[in-house]
Length: 260
Length: 101
Image (cartoon, rainbow over all chains, first blue to last red):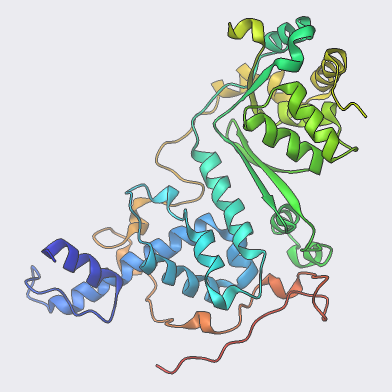
């Protein structure tokens, strides 16, 4: 093991002794200085997770969250210097973290919070223009085969739990009151999208969720809408498209003629 | 039953959506002009200083003494969260024996 690897290992594990060969500029004990550095590295990363996963933290309380986050930091330190994106894999870690097993919805809430961070940092893109929409409408006969293009800041997450309601309840001043009305075992699909400088989270009805998932998978407008109807007779394509347009999620509509 | 949708019905859906959709498609060019994303600044105060030592705030970091606090019961709003499958009607919390150091 080279010196860097020894140093890195000791940084994340308090049981490992201070790496050999360290000196301090003022003659103080390098082991003590190293302990300060080790502490700050871990606390800084735990703070970063606390910033990115505020609802997850509220759900389990700060003490539990910080202890759980510390285990994650030691198991999966950042591989990139971009601290803002740190925490990918945290949801999977929570899934395997047995002390949190009593809250089965916790990993998906964490997943939703990570998607929010990713949407925030996704590339900017202009939503589809009125003119482009009007042009697509004018070529109505080609709409069934049209394909939708989406902005990079769009994310979709389907969960067997009421993740959107849980998340939304924690945005309220009176989270405890709001939470009392949340049935956690209700499946919900979240649409996460940033428009300008706001990341919004929407709850999609089952048909809308199928429709969007189909479009994202490359299905045509007609095929995705038909599949959504088949799975959910309540599917409302106009309301769903209005939501997507309002969210700034649609970047363009490619009709077969334009694609040629 | 034939589930295939006609071009006309898709056009009606899209046309209706255009008429009821809010802001973005209407006001897209104005809003970008007076706002710009501040690069390097994350959702909330997640700056380099928090990465630890060698920076001015490093000395103010909390110490890392909590050890196995996760072996205790999570004490957050989960206790107030309703759960149909729970006999108490609220989130179930698992209890764990605290490890001996």
